[in-house]
Image (cartoon, rainbow, N blue to C red; front, top):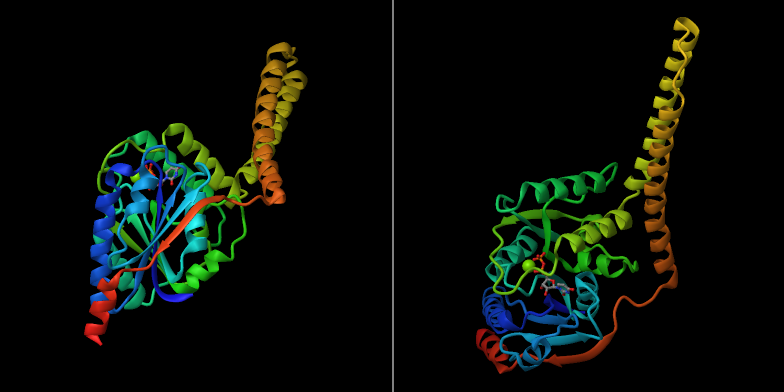
Length: 328
Ligand code: UDP
Ligand code: MG
């Protein structure tokens, strides 16, 4: 593993903004080479895009930085794309950022400073605020993190995004996680080491719309929850206890009514309500169990997380070499 920094960028239909992003990354690479003698490579992972993303990525110049282009055999999802990028990153430290321009390249120098000067291993970014999001969405994310961190030893920080830098030893740790069901934010926090949060203001998307609508966000949340915590299962036990306890209270109160007041208890409605509550809770919890069983199945099958259709490596052109020899 060479010293330096790999920047992993997952791409799904990002043809419009890619050239601009690449130019910005090359600028950052030039600055890092000059200021810190840090050699940088970028790893673009095309996650089965349907537009011209791959063609554009292939043609990007390797000026000031090495360029790797990986094309997955189909759309595997962002987590798989990140995994592919991490597996192929040739430098010791790894930085992950989105390819849609929402993660400002200018912030990279700040992240690198926390790593090199501050000695931090995981430098993660978080949205400074969520004021531009709907109340429902904020509530959703609050609930998600509350469940996720329930009883957890290592709390996964709220609002943390996928824009983060891992020092060589943190990247090595992340590389050792074999699971198929990946939840990157969780994994990067779970490994520990010295972590620091950097707040930033996410930029507007350069173009297009987010690939994550309501349904896929919900899917991702269930994925993250069940691959990271057993809180939903614990919730089932808790609900069971609660139900049993209220049934006991109900039973006692009925007994009381019959014995003390001599009231004939109406049977039919209470039985039906009880049945429906029990039936509903049981069905939900069977679903929750199913999530975990499915997870065990897919881990058990141990299929590869992604397949590579195409891989190209371009070494940085003379530019950096020239500046480096000049500096020496
Ligand atoms: N992405 C990907 N595969 C997918 C969906 C998205 O590689 O199936 C990439 C996308 O190109 C972008 C990043 O993941 O670089 C984040 O996607 P998006 O901007 O849609 O998500 P959001 O910013 O809304 O979280
Ligand atoms: Mg985005």
